[in-house]
Image (cartoon, rainbow, N blue to C red):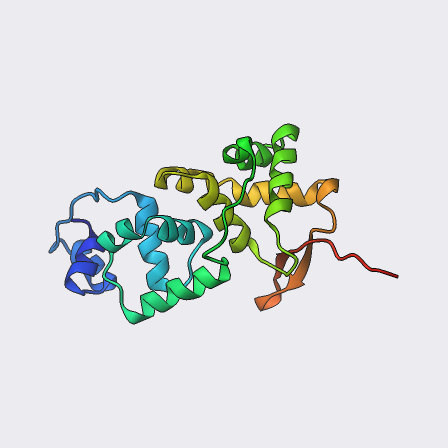
Length: 195
């Protein structure tokens, strides 16, 4: 058992377990649970989930239930993040290259960037949506295994940055003021005015 599994199984805080481990009173083994699943559990406990964590929790609920005993607060966190990502959603056809499109788009490969932008245009609804909406959809539509979700999720932020720089994606996004003086990207279909 690793320190996270002990904390969850025995309801002992991680802070106490880390102090015990540091003082030499606790010997813990290496976890058999992959790091990305440990991050999902950590994100749920913190109350702020990444797109990768949302996608993994949605696609593999049985695996998640093996790792964590849900509290009402955990269930509320999942519910809120699923709503933010627009889950559940209808099946989308993003094309044959959709699995590798974020990787190629992140590397600025013109062919994959074009496929990525085309997929984004199919995915974005008329109303405003945020990063989580797009990333979770992309990850759950084309990634069949948890390790694929974990790997591809690393490329999506850079791929979206490159897509926003592409002229064919102009009008499909804008910046919006967010907390602490930061900005947040908002994605939407272009507004067409009938004059």
